[in-house]
Length: 435
Image (tube, rainbow, N blue to C red; front, side, top):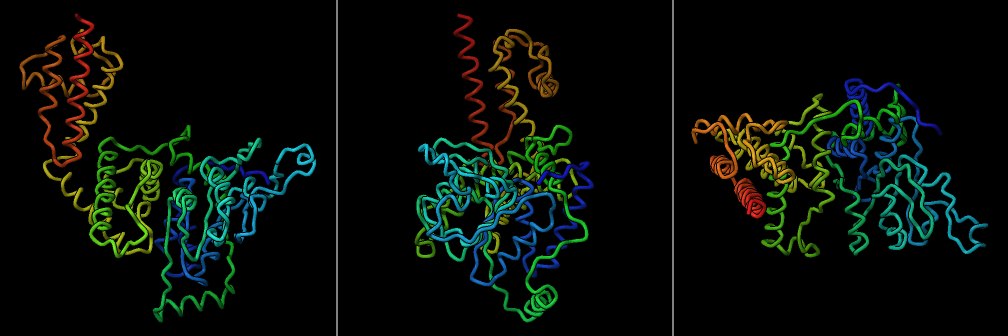
């Protein structure tokens, strides 16, 4: 199946995604947050894991979301302990096997599919799960001497339970979006579910207009900063602010685990891997995109709970939102966002000088291509009474400018210390050159 090529524009794509999300919400009752989360995963080219008891319509949700797209292959499998990797990667090539080479025929396998649904994923044995890790993360089949690039865009996995082991922990890290279905018992919700079942017999339905897979691919490239035509920008202070919220949430989750170990008997700590940390940047772009913007704003960080909590675990969401509110209040006081933006520009300026230390031998106001230069020199005129600076005066200017910042919280205080250390190292290296 060839990918359908289509003209792409962010505004048109946004309308298509909004229509698709509304359609799925009409078909799948009481799962609005999970639906938003899975569409976010697909826009980021990531994977999602759904946990619930039997009969909670996990399969229907995955199939209905996949049905919103056209021009994409779909791989589906029910996992079991008896299965081997060939269930996912295709049967072995007999002729190659006769030569002593284990080569999978990947046609119609997960490797050749854009979407995948794996039901009861933790029923698979550890050997098979280990084989899946590379395909999910690296988008390639790498087994023995065989290397095949994988088409895989997003995989949705479902499970009735979590099985904890070294392999499953690594697998869970590949599914950075996680949700827990809590069965709905309210009469109104049950009535709506019954209505939908009578109308559709528990099967997915196709909308009048489906989203071409190429539109999803282009939107995903834009979200991940890979598109050559369109982009979504993230200001420096928003990156810093979002990281502060995430770190604070991680600290609070670990504090809760230590205070209530009986509630988390199998959890030693709450750990956000570097893989998941950096995905926050893509998630922020998703949030901006779904709000019709081409730039991220600080308030977008509030919805990072879709990425860093298990959707459906209300206490986790509440904790994240509380952490966001705490950090946002700190940054909103005394124009801290503007101060952090200037601080980050200053840090980038220091990095520029570290890469080209010979620039310190001439006045800073002569250094071209740096947006901070004008602000820095204006401050120097007011505070130090100088407009030209060389060598030792440059050091005094940079140290004085750094000292003008206030530490609005621990993260900013640590950043100031590290930047001061960078300045000292920069001039120590210069002193060796001058001597």
